[in-house]
Length: 307
Image 1 (cartoon, rainbow, N blue to C red):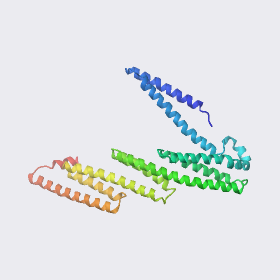
Image 2: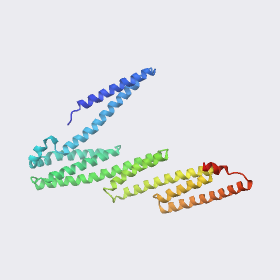
Image 3: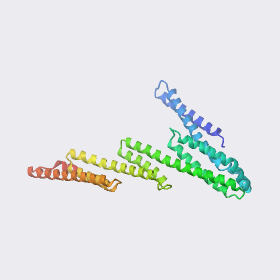
Image 4: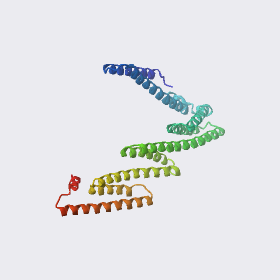
């Protein structure tokens, strides 16, 4: 395991530097108690640094267990490959298996984040790759090979479970976040992130029904957001009497409606409604133009729209 002295010293120096920098800025600005926000900022830096180190070191330690020790001894490992495979099977692999099972149980506990499931998935991947290398050794007994393969099957089951759980929880969280976004672009961007999560997992497990249904639901949400956006703009233009602009915006809504992923009955009903609105606006536009022609005036709304 790498030494943490240098990292902790650098984190402490960064926190101290940030404290004095903020303290000086606040003193110059006339703040009466500049040490309070400066201390809070420095504390946050230290907490983030320590938390990041904990995550990185935990992954490094697991990788260390899965890879049978320090890579600096690779020459010795290749030289004594048979002896090491037996030793790894009886000690290191068993330790790794217990550690992964424990972390799997923690990830399945209530309140865990989706990233915890993704971490377990990567650990299972590493375990399977390492045991495949160990199985290539000719010095393993048939009993130990059976034990290793049983552990692999267990890891494959956990691997699939945690990857699917990560995809489900992450996409659900991002979809909920997208629904609460105010800007249309933010809604679509966040929903696309949820879609990316599902598509990345569907490349591995393409026949998962729940994931495919969630993907379709998110695509329908994105389409509905785009259509609703252009319909709202069209309604605003129609309310202001800008009939030409309203018609063009309804056509944009119709474009996204026909291009997006929606059920046939929803698409047909939406297209019929937009078509009726366009027909009504064309009637209003024609009547407006006739009135302007009869009065010998100028259609100021049309000129404004052209500008």
